[in-house]
Image 1: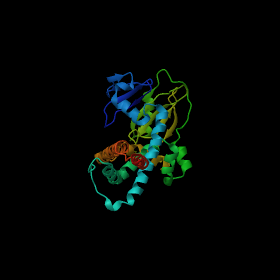
Image 2 (image 1 turned 90 degrees about the vertical axis):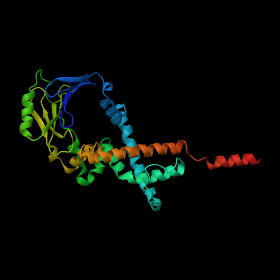
Image 3 (image 1 turned 45 degrees about the vertical axis):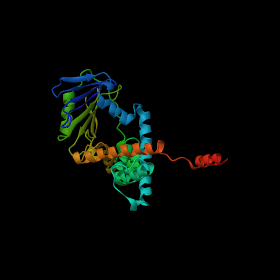
Image 4 (image 1 turned 120 degrees about the vertical axis):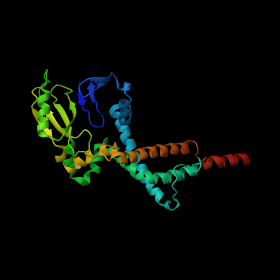
Length: 297
C-alpha cells in the first residue's frame, strides 16, 4: 500500500492507494467496502485524471496549462471588445436565432456576465499547473522568493521502511503537536530513504486535505520535520487557497452553484463559438467576387 486518504465529513470511507493504479475504499472500522485494480473501474478516478492530466500525465498538464493561458486571453480580450458595444447589451440565455450574427451577439453578452467567474476558474486552475504564473498572481501578498521557498516540499532522508512501523506512536505525536488538526493523508515512502508523510488539516485551512505536514523517519518513526500551514508566508497561504476556490471546497452550496453556472456558461459559449465558426461562417469575399467574375465572362 502506498497511502491512505482518511474519511471526512464529506466522504465517510478511507481511500487506500495500492501500487500505481489499484486501490480500495474501506470503512472507518477497517472493512474493505470495494476495491479496484485500475482507475478505469472507478468513474470518479478517471474523470479526475482526464480533467487534470487528459490521460497523458505531465504532458497533459502542460496542455491544460497552455489552454488555461489561452482562456485567460480570450476572457480579457472579449471584455475589451464588449466595452465598445456595451450600449447594445441584451441578456439572453439562448441566441435569438441560430444565425451567425445572433450567436455572436449572444456570445458577447453572456460572456461578459460569466467573465468574472470564468476568470476565477481559469486563473486558479492555471496556478496549479504553472508555478511561475502562480508566483506572479500571489506576488502582491509577499516576496516571490520567500513564497517559492515555502512552496517547495522539504527534502529529508531517513532509513528504509521498517517491517512494522509504529503508526500509533507517529499519529500520537502528530496529535500532540496539532490537537485540533484532522488527519487527512498518510503517504508511505516511494523509494528507500524517503520519509513517511502525514498531511493534516487545521480548522482555519481552506484546503480539504490541508498543508500542515509532519515527516517521520521510515525506519525509526522519529520526527524529521514539521510544517505548520498557518505559519507559512502570506504568498504561500494565498497559493494554498487556489484549489479550494477552483474546486468549490469553500463557500458552501452558494459557491458550488456559481461555479456550476460558470462551467455551463463555458460549455455553451465554446459550443456556439465552434458552431458559428464551422457551420455559420460567411463565405470569403474574394471567392464570391471570383464567382461573379466567372459568371460575367
